[in-house]
Image (cartoon, rainbow, N blue to C red; front, side):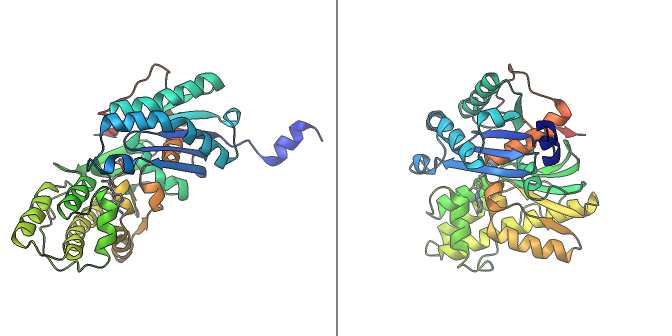
Length: 346
Ligand code: KG4
Ligand code: ZN
């Protein structure tokens, strides 16, 4: 049997893409085959570096990315059992995010592309969060109603096809994750606030305080800044309130609004399946309630694993695979775009 025959009997060689994510405070790299098979996903968190400042310090973040990016790339390759020569393309998140942080990932990816002679793909962070779901469920069929809830964004999107998104609604002020982080600070739970609230809320009573559900009856837009103020006002009035009860009640207010609007969107665009993405999509209460309530609504919910919801490199590689097919490689003079938006149709 000739070498060609061996290759043929094994099937075509998978397209292996390395994805780099450095938009905020995680240095993350993943290797994904054919847009769907995660071979590795390594995340080096900078939480410890930023915790004492109560939030991400951009200058510290970019310096840390610089130190971490090469070791994390090396680890992701080892975990995937791959070498740079096995890659068919290399991708990096090119926005939105912190300028200095984005530049580290973008520059690292371009360097690999040049050395290995492979295409570079600049990936939109928000699109990557949508594609996390395809890493675990490649056969998801659009139209999908998607709730994207992260530290910087909160939006409901109708995914009409690959790369084709209709923005149905978004936050008019704070993002959901931002609200979690700010309320956690009010409750003395530290940073990052989302996971801390999630943890403490498991022993709290979600009905203890009836916090407002902002814009619940109005379309698809969100507003979380008033809810955060309501928690602050409540804590001033009731300084001895049980932290777990306040956390659980706040969390349920956010979850109520998110699920109501997502289901409203799913009905409007006749999506049989709903999907979530972004760091807040790792929230355990959101996940449990969503599964129940979406099923009761006669639809299916697909929830990516929590580690694929929070920032990671695998989602960048997955989105890059689809973008490479539709748009081809990104020119090497492509930059980093801190204010990049999700490309939507009107
Ligand atoms: O997507 P992500 O990792 O980074 C951004 O793109 O912003 O999201 C980070 C946000 C933070 O606000 C964090 O507090 C929140 O996601 N988050 C959570 C949970 N895990 C992370 N919020 C609620 N519950 C969680 N379990
Ligand atoms: Zn994110």
